[in-house]
Amino acid sequence: MKEPEPLQKRLYKLKEAAQYLGRSEWGMRDLTWKRLIPTVMTKGSRKIYIDVMALDAFIEKNKDLYS
Image 1 (tube, rainbow, N blue to C red):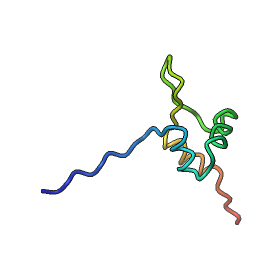
Image 2: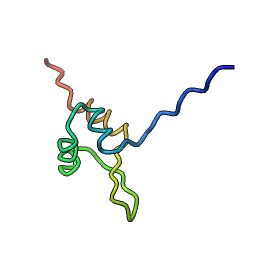
Image 3: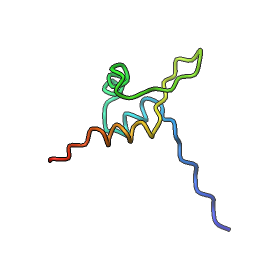
Image 4: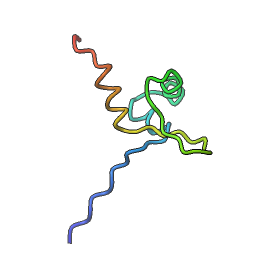
């Protein structure tokens, strides 16, 4: 019997999102503070999550098409 494929995460912790973009954790914080990448937070929690779709949109928006 074939093993089921693992679920893909949609929300990344800040550190994971930084790794996804190849940035430092503080560089990722800077992007969120400048509101260049939206965050997801639950009420009453201090944890910051980033939607992987927002990360992909950030990459697409900031591609240098002329390099």
